[in-house]
Length: 115
Length: 110
Picture 1: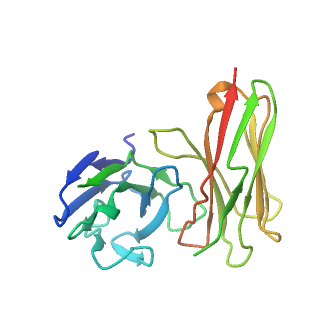
Picture 2: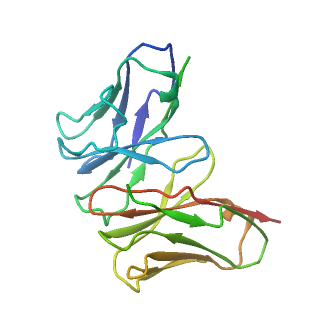
Picture 3: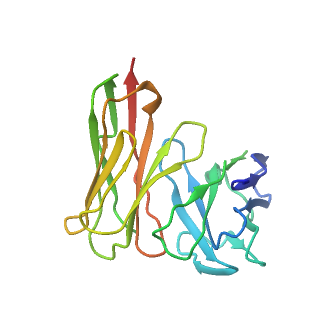
């Protein structure tokens, strides 16, 4: 079946603009996670959802970052008033159950560049 | 924030050599330990999920062990092949959040 998809794959935006990054998880997967990954580093947790409920957003860097998953499927990560330091690869992952003991499947990521 | 350390940071081995690397993490609030294989320009690919102290998992030439009491996991690759070249990430999970290490970059020289 189809894996996790993300769009756009690449986004270049000017400082101060808002961006919305989309994640389409594997069908039926309950949990959805957002990560940010700097070059050469492991993924850094941002937030996660079980169904449509945002369970933990402690990893969001500041209040310019927000995420939603209104129908428990597709999720959008929004960055308002982008800054150059927001440039990174943004990855989402999904897993089939609520428990952290189940595998996550990662999407291809969105490479965000803020100029 | 969970302090996850992986060592070594990078490793070069000859084809056919066996190798291993370490993931260290705080043993408190532990729920599960995930290992991922990550090739450049691709997404991390799940290798193992382990939850119990003493767990051992194996997939082909790759295996992993878990010690939750002392807070470490080992990943072993037997008879390394060039296609094993990748970064290996570990991620302990506290029940909701995943905390990724920076990975061990493995290069297998033909």
